[in-house]
Every structure is written in C-alpha cells, then in structure tokens.
Length: 195
Image (tube, rainbow, N blue to C red; front, side, top):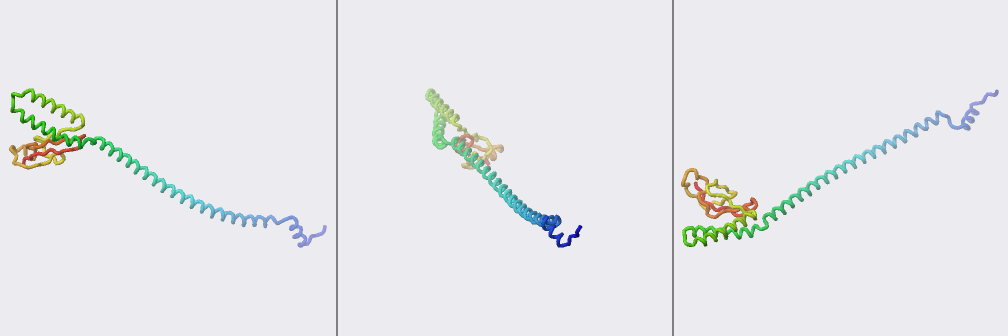
C-alpha cells in the first residue's frame, strides 16, 4: 500500500465533505446566534405582552368606574322621578289649605249658635269629606299642640312666658296648622312657643 501524503488526505477529506468537528463548531456558532435572536425576540414579546396587560387592566378599571357612575345616575334619576310623582300635586294642595283653614274658622264661629243645627251638620260633613280627600292624597296634619318645638315641623311666630313649667320649650298655641305631603313638609305649623 502506498502511503498517502498529507495533501492527498486533505483533498480526500475535502472531497468527502467537511470535517464533523468543523460542522459541529459551525452549528454551535449558528445556534448561539439563533438563541440570542430568539432571546431578544422573547424579551420584546414579553414586554409588549406586559404593556398590553397593563393597558387592559386600565381599560377594565375605567369600564367598572363608568358602569358604577351610570348605575348611580340611573338610581338618582329614578328617585327624582318618584319624588316628582309623589309631590306633583303639591302646589294644588298648598293652595287648598287656606280653604280648610276657613272651614275650621267657620266651624269655630258656629259652635256658639244653636238654632241652626242642620247647617252645622252640613258644614261638618263638607269639612270631613274634604279632610278625607286630603288624607287620601297623602296630606297629613302636623300635630303641634303641647309638643316639643321642632324647627323641622314648626315655625315660631312668637314666644311667651310658659303658663305652666312643663310647657317650657313646647308649643303653647297653634296659630296655623302645618301639613305634610308624603312625609315632606309642605307648610310649617305657625306656633307660639313657651319660654
């Protein structure tokens, strides 16, 4: 056998293809570059994902706040409508209150006259029907006589020395009755307070 020279070995190797060691080295270098690109791309994608999640969280928070504000607005509007319906006839009833005052004054005057009993009965019938009408429409009289003075229900016209010690700070006399419509004061009781 003839010994091959080094040159011939290299040519034979070159003809067969690259050396396995050289090929592995190239693959390793190429793989490192791919991993580096992949790592960089992964970091960019991760950063974009995190940014998108924060944006999503912010939008979700805005949505919840807006939804809550709308719900509050809806409830407030519904309550205002209900209050408006309850007190829709308020002005009409306020204008009718002097009529009931006149009825009461007439009844007080007639109590001294005995010969016109049937007239008194008729007047009392009208008065009672009118009061029933007011009650059916949510109007209630504010009780004031001998009660503690309450600024939410009473309007003090004057103060006088209390005729009895237990009437101090209480209503001594009612000048004009007060009324509520569905628990809302529509006219305060005008009262005299003992001091």
